[in-house]
Length: 209
Image (cartoon, rainbow, N blue to C red; front, side, top):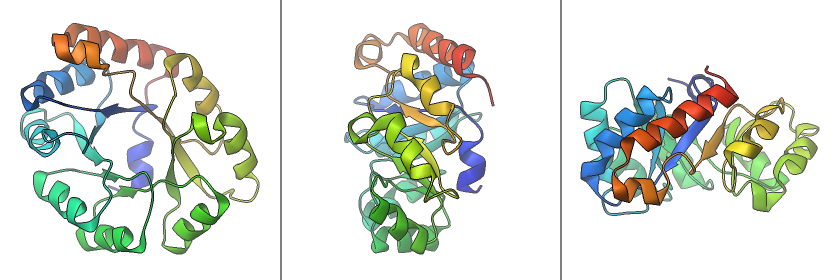
């Protein structure tokens, strides 16, 4: 699957931190039931790789990817775990080479003109804009649309359900990333119905792709 196809499947990609791998499957099932299939499990905890394996094996309707991938070694590890796409907060030539070696879609991060130009040089035209709010948000993305008309972004970082529509209204935004869909409090309580409700609210407000 191409990165462009992946981003067109959903208005929002949950950015998920999983502390307990046993939570991975019921959490993913709740999101899928709520209408959100594309899931990003971040490599911020020791449970991340096992969580990706479990979701890939047991939640057939989910498209599970790995986020916060920083090195070629991590890229190989998530590919071996069954990740179907990879997200990184930035981009290096080594990471670009790892993506080519595995043929997994990579959504690399870029926020400045120079970073975007480097990404373009390395063959990437769909980019993560992170951290979105702290990097100028909607106004910055509007400004970037002039010189970089062929680039489409997935802004992530500080976006809420209330501000999501402002981002999605931009022509150069394909979808957004959001951590509000799997808040730590609901994950700890194993409130899967609550997470499903958050997914349903997001789809109701932002639309289903």
